[in-house]
Each structure stands twice: as C-alpha cells, then as structure tokens.
Length: 120
Image 1: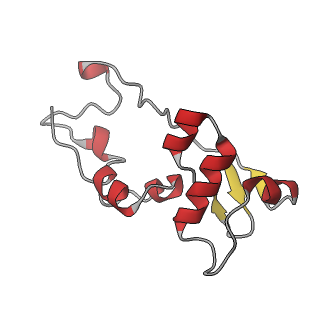
Image 2: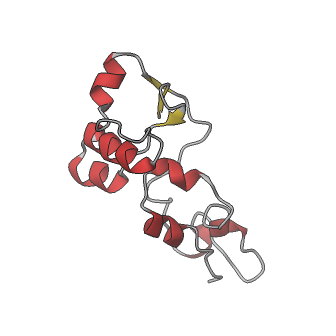
C-alpha cells in the first residue's frame, strides 16, 4: 500500500483499471483525482512524480484484502452469512464501514458496497 504525505491519506486506486490493465500508476492517478482529497484547483494527480519526490511512500498494511474475497462455496466462503450470523459479509459491507473510500470507488459504487448483505 502507498501513502501520500502531501494529503496524509493512503493512495486511492481505481481497482478495475489496475485489474484490467495492470497499470498501478494509472489506477492511482484516477483514484486520487476522484478521491476528493486533493485541494480544489490541483493539477491532475501524478503518482510517478510524487513517488520520485518522496511524497508517496510505501506503507505496511495491517491485513491483506484479497481482491477475490477468497470466493468459495457455502460455509467455506469468506464472510459466509447465515440467518444466525450476519457478521461475515456485513463486517465490511455495512453503512458503518469506512475503509471503502480509500479504494477510489464512486459515490454510487460506495453506496452499493456499503449495502448490508442478506443471509444465505
């Protein structure tokens, strides 16, 4: 994970751009431009330049987030929600979960991701 010392926030990425094209730089530039963290009137975000100027530094993550959610069937699935235990998916997919904003999603995508999941 990268951290931008200029805005004191983790670098937000457009994950779909990174996953499709494999271009971290473009994903970071698009994610930060859409994040709302840059001051009004700022030039487009330049991940490569900010990294070269040591404004963007590597930052260790406390936990890994698998892009695929560890997708498996039934009770082996990561975050499997049942009628008795809704914590699985809803630990992250809830209106109270704040980490989504760091990944560069649009407001509409954020609304969808924060919608609590229902039991299987």
